[in-house]
Length: 228
Image 1 (tube, rainbow, N blue to C red):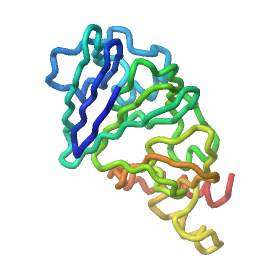
Image 2: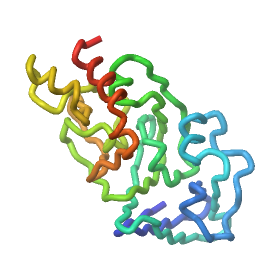
Image 3: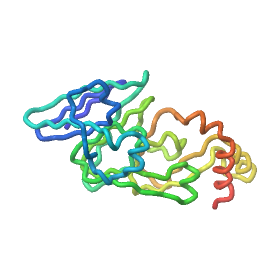
Image 4: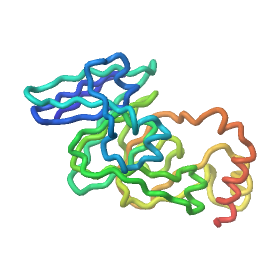
């Protein structure tokens, strides 16, 4: 399998016998693809995938007899496709809201459900985890980049190896005055403790509703302030 990505478009080349599943909205207008009556990995990360419309209603294509070429065009003005290659036995978190599709060789999909205070700060509770070997295709409104940087806005993080450790941080330096100010700040920083790479969006696309929810912001950063 070969995936070639350019600005707002992608080409998926399937060799004979290979299978690829697509989120329905990515293939809008393509009637030639098969519907998945039973979703791939039916018990794999159902909550996160249903919340982002990538569980039921997926479409698929299989290169049964010959090679197949699939051309994809995004629906965002400056959208971007990105292929995440997962080696065998490696487990990688992929944010379901940017999931566009994945190949049939993916061994397993499951969800890590997290409820500790750090996850309330990050507003992340459901972590869809893909186990290789295989390729996951993501699509978002701005370009993706793979980087070894360790600090990000939480809304930008798309994918990383689940073995990495991380915590929630504050936008300003860690001091008493800064911690008081950060209670009222709009951002929360996702800080990786160990080395490694992560796939992130170039820009944050946090919803306006969340940004205007002052009660939620104060509660979230108060947890960080008191280090509960």
